[in-house]
Length: 313
Figure 1 (cartoon, one colour):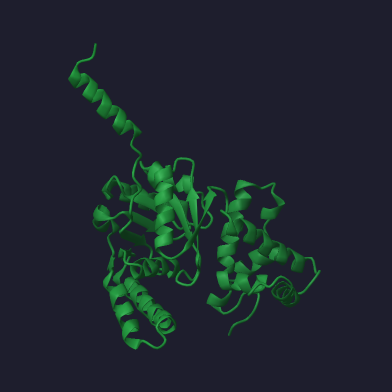
Figure 2 (cartoon, one colour):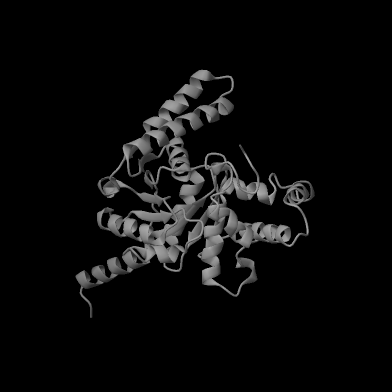
């Protein structure tokens, strides 16, 4: 017969086993990457009361990032506080006070709740980053990638915290776009997933959930549509101008597919479709385009270079 102390111990163990693991309330955020996406993520997190550290390789990059965020906040505050200039100034000042910058991610992740990576779409570079941060971040810290094309599972495998690793795919421009795709990889715990959902809502975004499948939801549907538009033009069935007009007036899209390709960047679109084609070479949706390959080879990448499918100079 068990003694009173044994019964008490068993009761405590049973209670502990039954107690659900609490979701993490994310307050401190580290964003890796000061580009358009990383700066946007840092801005919305700081604007919603989170303490944010934005990390990139040089102080010059970070100065440009902070200036871009400040300019974005000024534009946004004019709409939010059209007749209240004092409130607009306070909003900008408060947001910027929540934001600091650093060139050394290892020194700033020791007290962070969430690391969001928004760097180049290169698996080896992402592996190197997360493998290093895994050694310095606390046990509770959640890692997330903003990747639009690489499998979350492949990135998470570089760490010892696959259960605390998920995807947070934001859309450009981040301050304006309401959607966030929250990706639950096979090893992602339910607690981590729910914490990322709650964080997305705290940013004022609408989260949708998706498993770790190529392109998640939006890009998996959008990229094949864009590529089929290029193939339709390649086959001589319609001009790019008429295809754009048709999709804007017939489907109600704000931009035609060729306008959107130029806006996103032809190199980005090629990178995505090439990666998917490598994974599933027999899938006709992922077939490459000679025209797209040619434009990228000629450095005609879209609006950012002044020419893509259209000229912008």
